Length: 102
Ligand SMILES: [Zn+2]
Image (cartoon, rainbow, N blue to C red):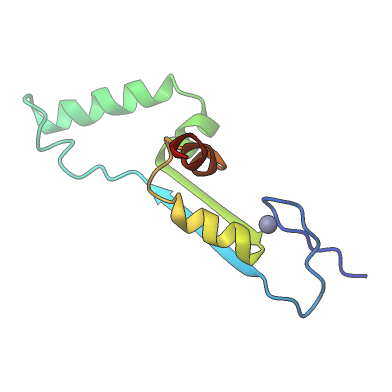
């Protein structure tokens, strides 16, 4: 029995139905970190490593790299793309804004 559900709205997605796999990867770009450091690069590195020792491993990994895979129905996939770079607006907010305009 195949019980795949949309990870966003929980709608059942029977085998053979249209569904989308969305992979999200984000990683920190450290470019320029050491170039901007005013002191000796080597001691800057030592300082950075010292700071990192105080952060727990899981937090550190999440700060540097995150990966997630979602299975979405078409409606949720479309919503996802619409809101992709505007994380300040929670899902459903666009409808509320339209309602206040009328
Ligand atoms: Zn959905």
